[in-house]
Length: 144
Image 1 (cartoon, rainbow, N blue to C red):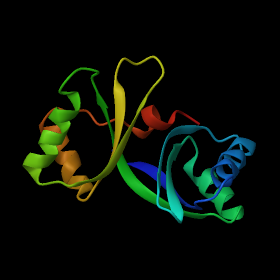
Image 2: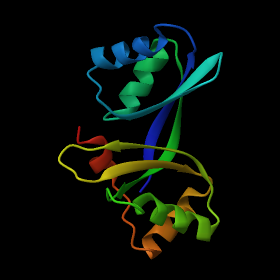
Image 3: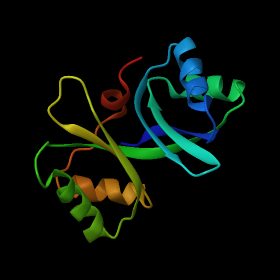
Image 4: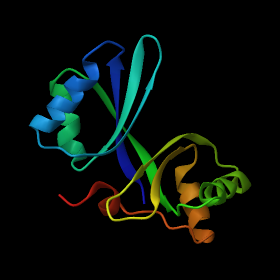
């Protein structure tokens, strides 16, 4: 199951991140997970939110450059080797991890890993073959 993620391009200057969070707060959009990577000139804010279409529209209206990307979410046990088992599946299948980030959900003893992969559909098949559960959108984003 593919989860949609927003990528927001930000100038690397004070206050730009807060402009995004303020716009989403005012629109009553909940951020479920995020990652921010930067260079000296710009940053890429990756967001998983509870209403992706509304968030994309709100941010575009505020003048942000926004794109959507498919990612997958995998729940991993909080123990040594949890991440290694998933990465081993990707390595064996020849799937490249372009980037990843993690977050913890309420009432869970596990972490949720978000993966952007070069061959996402194939990776989903390989995870299924190896009995690694991929989380549905509803579990990652919450119900709206």
